[in-house]
Structure formats: C-alpha cells, structure tokens
Image (cartoon, protein in one colour):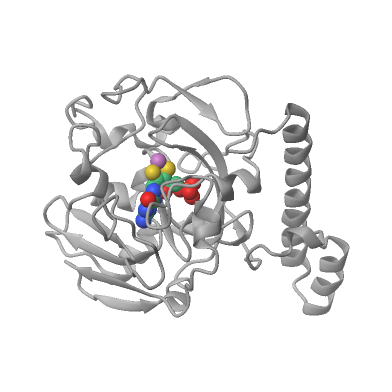
Length: 322
Ligand SMILES: Nc1nc2c(c(=O)[nH]1)N[C@H]1C(S)=C(S)[C@@H](COP(=O)(O)O)O[C@H]1N2
Ligand SMILES: [Mo]
C-alpha cells in the first residue's frame, strides 16, 4: 500500500467529502427542481473535476429518513480512493491494492440475477429490471473486515427484503443462499478458494431492513472491485458475508454453505456477526483500524448495530454460533 503523509491524507479526504457533499446537494436540488433544463444548469454549477470523471455513472438516490431501524451515521466517510483501492475480491486477486486494476474493464452488462428456490414466483431478472424494484437509497454504513480494518461507506442500494417479497418466499424457506459469478473468461479465478464464492443468511437476517443489495457508492454506480453490478451488504457482519457480483439468490430450507466457512470452518462460522468478545483463533477482534486513520478504535458489538439486530440472536450462544 502507498505510504501517504498525514497531511496528504487529511487534505485528500476533505476534498473528497466536499465534492461528495456538492454532489449530494446537486441531487437534492435536482430532485426539488425536477426539470431537465434546470438539472443541466445545476449540473454545470456543481460539475465534478475532470480527474474524477472516470468514475461510475451518477445514480439518482432518495434520502432514507433516519430512523430507529436505519440509524444515521455521522462518522467521517472513508475516501473514495481508499474504498476503491483496498479491496478483497479473491476472484481477481488476493492483493487488496491490486484488485482495482485487475478488475478494471470487468463486463457487467448484460447481467442476470436468478431468484429461485423455495419461492412462489421464481424469476431470472435482467439486472436493469431488478434495479427498478426499489428506488436507490443512500445508506452510510460502518463496515468491518474480519482482518481487523474498517471503513465508513456511503452505499447506494435498497433493502434485499424488497426483492424477496417480489418472489414470495414459501413457508418452508428459512435461509437465503447467494452465489457470485465464476467466469474464467472474465476473472483470473486463481486456485485460492473454491469457486463460485457462495454465502448465506438466515431468512430473518436477509429480511432485516439494514440488509441491502448495493449497486453504487458515493452516488455513482459500483466499480468492479467493489462487487459490480450488485453485491450484498450486511453491516453488522464481517465483510466477507457481503458477497460480490451476485448472479443467484436461492431460498432454502437448510443452512446454505458459505465460502470462508468451507475453507476454514474453525475460523469462520456461518453467522460471522461482528463481536469484539469472540476472537478469531489467530487474532483478537477487540479493536480495529479505520482506514485513513492512525491508531486503533474499539470494535463495537454487532459493529455498532446492536440496537437494530441483537434481538435476532436472543438466547443464542454467540461463542458457539460465531
Ligand atoms: N465474491 C466475493 N465476494 C467478496 C469477497 C471475495 O473475495 N469474493 N471478499 C469479501 C471480503 S473478505 C470483504 S472484506 C468485502 C470487501 O468489500 P469491498 O472491497 O467493497 O470493501 O467483500 C467480500 N465479498
Ligand atoms: Mo474481509
């Protein structure tokens, strides 16, 4: 990773945030004005600098009202640069700082997502059709990787529950299984894990309003390295539960397999809730390094979302179900 001086990091992040807030104002103003010519005018006024124009396309987002279920997060956003250049996406590389370049040009259209299994109305969605199910919301979430680092990411997406309701889960459905694309023509797929990457959630976790399918970040379409065109985000669980580049969502009666649990069952459980009191067998999980900051922070129970999700695990021994 590039070693940056403290001053560089600070000024870089301030710039980042300033541009982003301008874009947010633009989106709000555009939504208020609502006419194409006025939007054009505002766009020129708040136009982002040339160097940033190689990013994704803008997504019109609605502001999710802060509530008890979707708590506001007033922590400093991690910079766009860090979010998009410090990635885990083993299909492309195990080197976090190399994923961005290795995934550059990854083709994500056409793209289909099959929603199947124990549902009344299974359907193979074209991605663009799937994205029309619900308006794009901005969801600023604290994210914690099992490796001990964290970020604050302004995702764009919508609750997974909205998709699940469309296909009408059957009574027997108790879990949701997810699968990533595994296409050797488009991904290196080095022999480091068994492909495809798979993940799973209990149905109530999947239906929780905090659980989203993300298709953007910082108000723009998701870059390949962050899991384009569509990835899962479950902010109270370790990052690896957030499976990227999803092609299949299957409702099931039994607990589905998950890639890291298959690879090292004693180290990675099915639940993988962020828990400072349950250490990884090889390291402590009590603290974390927020990318872009110096020093360490205390890791919070359920990554700080305990008020929203602790009830899902009432009565469970979280040392057994880690
Ligand atoms: N398909 C797939 N999904 C994946 C991974 C992966 O290697 N392959 N890595 C996971 C891990 S360990 C983390 S921490 C997050 C990282 O997401 P980010 O790069 O957008 O921050 O993606 C998760 N989703
Ligand atoms: Mo991770």
